[in-house]
Image (cartoon, rainbow, N blue to C red; front, side, top):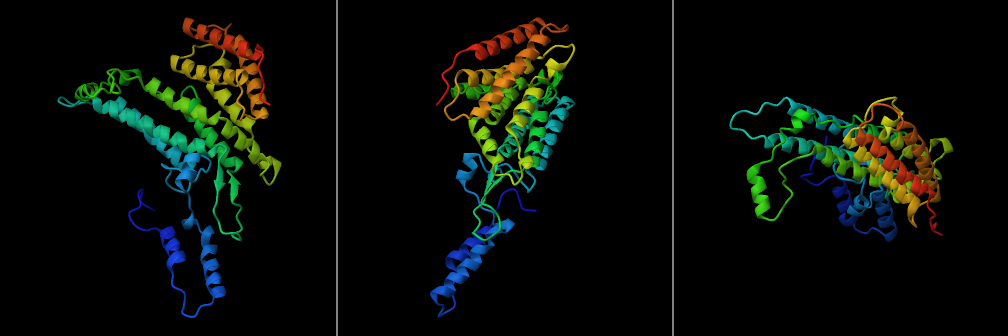
Length: 347
């Protein structure tokens, strides 16, 4: 296995150096030199010679050109890292702090675990609507633009939605939350330097909401919707394509799973996440982007209508707290107004 950080020249480096600097035999003709260069370039399809640039990473299209992804199975790697992060949080719940030690070690460990979950979520989200961009030399037998296969996208969505959007996705026990005190020396130094980032209180739910908000922004973005819709035409067979409706339906089901229960409350962190989703639906209805696709808007309008029906039914059930009942009424009103509003559709 390769180390996490490369410390010496790799196969691609030697290949590139060979192509650029390999001396040709004395007396070689231009045709012979061209044939030798073609032979070197023809190796481009070899797995160890895969190539991607910083632009590939920053554009967010190619799932194989990104940081924090080690190995040839990104979904398996992300699942493993998520399991490690959850185990780390669980261990802090029973971790004994000895006399003379500091509670801040618990806070740092939980913060690290949540950040690791964020990195894993980014690896998974890149698979949805992803397109491999290969720089093979013509004749390699591989197409240069390859949408991520539907099975891989569904597996990534299954993990992403189940691990980040479901009601029991991330739980930090209340007893552990009460022990997440800061390093007071670090807090004092930060305040003295004008940095308010080190606070006294620490709310894992707020940190997780920022992570979930970021994932929602990507999964519901115009760019992801466009690539999924365009990739349907690139599939060898129609039944092999991943559909945008699958993404929207799965998110709607897991984000609002409490609506399908016959009784029970909706916790505060879940209400915050549900508001984020509802706000994005309303925004698409009220101010559709000029870059948005009509099919995406239609699907999201249909989801908003279905969600409003589910909310109206759920409001009448028993077991809701005053906060949850007000939350459903507020979100329902938001969606109803957005669905009834007159909008200027982009040309």
